[in-house]
Figure 1 (cartoon, rainbow, N blue to C red):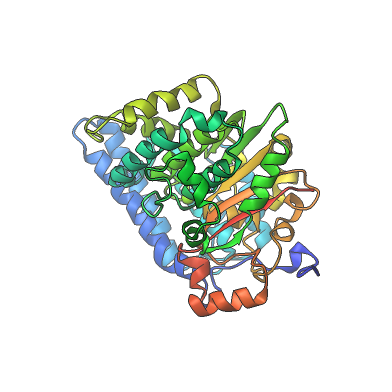
Figure 2: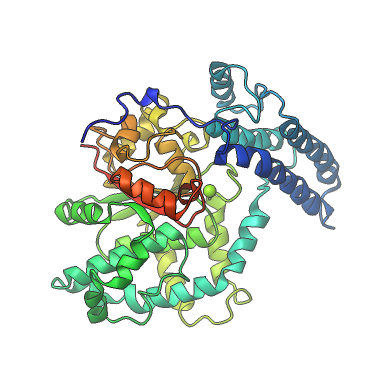
Amino acid sequence: MPSVARNVHDVRAVWTSEEGSMAKETAETRWAKIIQGTVDDIGETAAAEDVDNQKRVESIAIQIALKEIKENIKQNKALTPLQDDGKPDIQEWNKQLAAIGGCSWINCPWLFGECYMYRRIQRILNSSKHWKNYDVFKRQKDSTFVKSRAAVAELASRYVQVVADTTLAQTESKEEAKKVLFIEMTEIALWGNATDLSLLANLTLEDLQKLQGSEAIQKSQRNIVDNDTDDVWGYLQRTAGQTSRQIDIVLDNAGFELFTDVLYAAYLLDSGISTSVRLHAKEFPWFVSDVTASDVDSLFEHLDSGECFPDREYLDQLVPRLRKLFQSGAITITSDPFWTTPFSFHEMPSKAPALFKELQNSYMVIFKGDLNYRKLTRDGLWPHITTYEEALGPLGKQSGVKILALRTNKSDVCVGVSNQSKVDRLNEEAPGGAWIRNGKYAVVSFNEGQ
Ligand SMILES: [Mg+2]
């Protein structure tokens, strides 16, 4: 296939000034609301009776500083260098801001501007005395998890009944059934949503086999505009003999999605696909709902709670099992400062060489969600038929990194669509770029880095 863009730098990154873009819409309508959410959250926490008086007093200054960011966004003020908060990354941020040149909230590279906003919030907290480790988004993250209680219970029951069925791991002759299960579990991790998926419900192994290639599978995959599931499965089958098969999952959101990711990790281990799983979280609160290490603790607190889950038939089987995977070190959690920089992953080999090397040694790296995908593809306005490999730049061809992106489309970038007539059909079906933005379409994109 001819190369669509010869040089990755030929492709512009999307700016928040781009007419008709998701970037512009987000910067103009969402950002100020997100900041107001943090102001309200601090206010609510500070108002609690048991809060230390000094902490309460300090909350007022924090709220004023946060409101100032909000006003700056609304007035489209220039992005200014971050003030020192004692952390080593500040210099890099300011260097990059200087390299971009004069830019403002509604006229800046979307990826930089959005990351910068979260770092600005964190700078205020880092500079405080009583709020350093405070998570301004925890309240929101917890409440979305609680709202998805029914889906959690449903998925727990399916996992215990179907996936954890020991016959599955032990039966060599059930290859097709295993593949169907892989597709199903991958789709749950992709959509972060159990309620749309019916395949796992009350199925026996025989039923799973019958489903291979069936209408149900095809229907569930219809909206995956670049679907490399078969290639991933092929890779996993071909390499199953390797002794060390550590899979890295670069997480996106907390709450129900994190629950599906932990289940996916458990499935990868239970099925023998992987020998260990490493979950990558963020070092500080990021993009509202992204996972920090303490969100994993929160997840288990919620799963243990009889108040949250009064019906415990399946959870009491599942939760100790999951906990054991963490305790034995089969699943570990890590974070790297690179994940909370504004750099696209094209910059990883130069800006985070140690991390890059670790990922090269990984059996497979799974990047979850929209922001990771934007970073993988430099948030570039690629023609949609650009290959995933090409858009990955230095992480693509000959990178040695096996990269699987599981992403529902929620921004301006999408590559890997097989041909122009498919793009035309998508544009007709979901006009105005809706298929790249509305979260109803997705990609399961895989590259072996060869
Ligand atoms: Mg996120």
